[in-house]
Length: 397
Image (cartoon, rainbow, N blue to C red; front, side, top):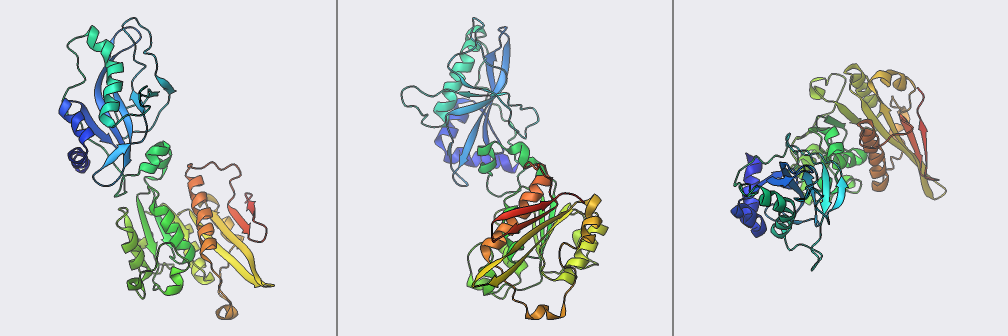
């Protein structure tokens, strides 16, 4: 398995992990955690139990890791002494974190700092300390038991990311991040706001991201999109530029040099959520009709900026179309659904921080819909006024 190869790679480049394996600990990886299984301990009745120590990993690069802190998680109950009392000097308490191994359930955290230095030298010293505390009484009562089983367990990772997602494990929000794992996202339009939505979603553990834009990448696009300007990108299709820019970060990325139109059902097959980031009313109307027809929930974004009295003002709009209410919202015509004869003469003002803000509001709403963020008012339409930084929302259909 690829993740077992990753463990072997880390063991070969990190002396502390190698010491753990050589001593006989049952070492494995679970997402971005180091797992030490087969840890014997006594419960409150003096019965022999087996638990697992789980410790966060700080991924430095493909080959090197370090500790995050002195704390651990434990799959098991609180270990006890021979006299039936809880082992002392263990801070922490009851808690759960999500692991991928189905037989591992974190029940609590523990904190025990070395008194002399206040910090462990490495993973080996850290694990040795906790094992001595937990397993000492069990080994004394049952001399044949040992934490050194030399067993090999599967290391597990189902991440779409090509680098370990240490952000999620450090923040202990794996259970929330898992809400996105089955989503196939379509981003229709990779201009100013669409490119920022792409940048945000690339770092979100959705199953797949499909981006659609037939236009070419020019200098003005670099001034209102994330990343740096690479002269070799100029003149290429936006889809090609963004595919190249992000494919080293994650899998499940499909940028297509296409326009989505009323007959693009095949392109959107199996899509579970969409973002519409187009500035032409007629295109928006056709896309809206198609998404409603296919029962795909979506968010439409837009901004209207004007220069008045020497400065720029205007509104940023974020509109969510849930499947059940999508047609009602479309009938409100909250966004332009047609092109007008004088559109070619209008000034299309777009500025990177406002594109990024519009994208942030859209992705925030998507994550509210999925239950990652709380959503007290459940607004389906939000207008942010640049002039006074007020956000106005609608939640009645």
